[in-house]
Length: 575
Image 1 (cartoon, helix red, strand yellow):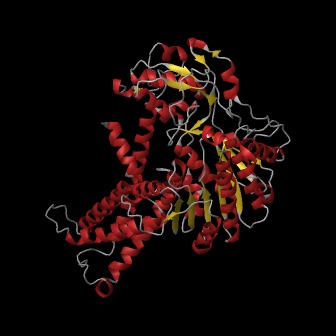
Image 2 (cartoon, rainbow, N blue to C red):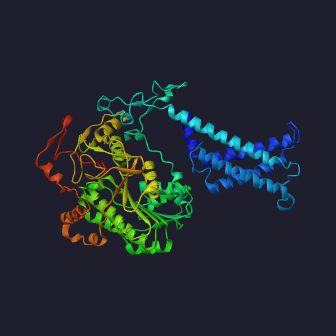
Image 3 (cartoon, rainbow, N blue to C red):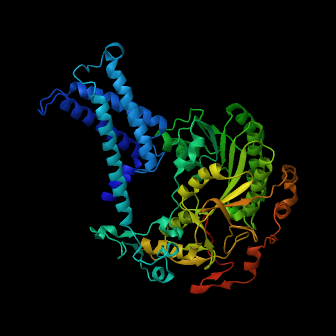
């Protein structure tokens, strides 16, 4: 019950804070009106001070909306928030005091004759103290709530936080997160012990970025998001909307995705407003015309094909969307003078060996090339796997468990890096503020997580007996992902958890020379050759895993064979 209440308050933070400030004004006006009259009688006529308090609450809320006082501009209870709160409260007090003096001529409908001239100024300082105290109490309660939840290993490092030991999962023992013995919890209870959540699979603490400190470039600007109907694109739109852009343009070729994101932002989705744009980034002429008409200031390019096995089968589609489609967006952005352009990439672009990796590495190179020819800032951001995104590994695992299994994993030792959707979006928004021209920004994603452990953990928490089947690495897949090419420095000049890499540009004319009529292997080799020109490190030739595994079956632990008889993946994106 308490957790649900805390979560509800966080979701309604703007409304709750505005209500607290309004109540503070009403109480302060009534209190000082009574004191100025020397009355302590509860029958004191409070009509006039209440009207003045309502006026002050309205003005305070209006000023607060302009400077985003209640909408997360600053961290709750921080000194920065106190300064903004003080400015808004004093401005409100001054406005109401002037209105009181000019009332007979300006606001004849406001009966403030019974209110002393000193009431509004005195109430201003009481309101400021009350509102600041309320925020301090909220922050203290939030910190206490946070500290009550610790893994019961007082000396455990962040990297050891997820209780995903293979032994526990194999025995069907579900891990729990509980308060540590060394942490003071005066009201510790059984309810403080919780199940392991998806975010605990990260192998590190979630990165909490103060977006308000870096996202001022979004307020009052025209912002365009491609791929707005996808997992990353839709969360980007929701976060950007908080910072009051002059216009948020959501572009996607999936009308259902646009319907979902508009519904999540406004609570309704009529799809009849210019903020939703149905378009395909492959249509270069349409994209150029759209950019010329709407003139975006900031562009987040999230549109892409991302499923590795599918692109291995159809590399031509990767070229059309991830390479040529990205170039059409970049060209349109350059032509209309976009100030900031963020290309969303993947960790598979580091030492690429798959069609997905090649295509996204080329998109990074094109972004770097356009950066040298334009006035704005053009950069890329690389992620690992996104927890819970549409078509992700976790989604596939849970669907397989619900169907009774088997759960398919490519290899017992395969590992991947993970991020939450919120972390990914925060990195993207921050990248546009701190990244330089032609760079790729990479989040410190902690240690990689073994996929087999994740699968067994999900099975253990489901309470079902489901078999894990190892199917073998597929074409283009790696056993372990890379974050950097060999020899690339881990340079972190602006943020301790964000690395900056200089990406070698690739000439747009070269990607146009990819001949889609060369067949599957010819197209893959053309992309690989272009990627070779972007690095001094040898890029391994793609191997045909399917052909190798069909020659002879490979036996993995737990007695499961890989080969022609192995159970196929059931969809989604198993690791």
